[in-house]
Length: 404
Ligand SMILES: *Cc1c(COP(=O)(O)O)cnc(C)c1O
Image 1: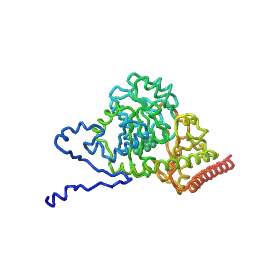
Image 2: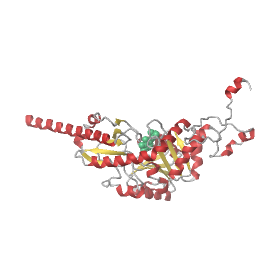
Image 3: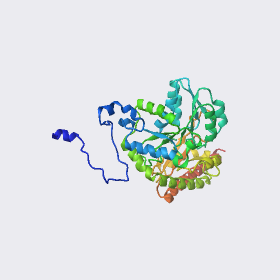
Image 4: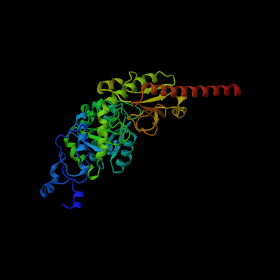
């Protein structure tokens, strides 16, 4: 063979005895076939075969297989982000004239996708009270194709009675989808509690290092496989094997990271709840949570993320208090090694329920730093709020003294 040809062709080397623990990164667009007949019949290879890079490589299939097994499903599709997984979990099943019901506390971009894009395509979108299966029953219609859940709700942490909601949806012939990002497949198995489809933002705890975006869609019934697979193929949705290998690497430590973060988060939540400027800590594993019994019945553990509601007099001082943090970083997303604090706004993200708490709540994600140093950071933040509230009261008293 001439040199130029040799430069292009890949020589085959022995794989005998090569048994690494890490998963190989198989990059591919083209997949070659042994002969013309194999190429001509490539469509018959089915969803488990390889025919083109977009439809999977051994790297992405390994990640899919791990998720399928942990979720108790039959197949998993990877998507370029958690939000893409949510969108492509519902889109294949909806046409103009259909109706979809969404939990009022769902991840805001998912709410946006339904009210902006699904409505534009002629799908009717309704919201239900996540605490009321009766509300789901009252809102089911003949054309309701999907009931979309997220438990606990984004930021405000309401636990849904998924088995009850799923029974109602199934009686009406609708599918049930659940965004399971908070609990992860280690701490909640929606497919075992009535869901047909479960999505995860692997971006968060599973990948765990704040450096990759990815999502997954796992199905219970193989009847759902073809509609999802064919639509994401036509839409050109796939993930890079390099990104999949980052998620696979994170996956190996995911269990111990999550167990650590959930333990420290719950200890912090208990202590924060005692502070006089704290109205409530929203965390379903707290015995004081109105959703504790439901959480205990269905979940296997909690997560490293929870929200704090401060008393009214403290709200205005939250931004300044956040600036005192030394170990926590300020930022969105969560589930990484670094602990994060993010002020979240709830107003504008509710349609059928009313949020009675303050507009700004503080969401904390507990990472892997030294827990005593993290706690000192939280104490500093609370002390700064205390000081700011005391100063404001002193100013108000002086004002009253001077002006009556
Ligand atoms: C972060 C998040 C998503 C979206 O994940 P991305 O990968 O950032 O798109 C979806 N659902 C929930 C509940 C999330 O917290």
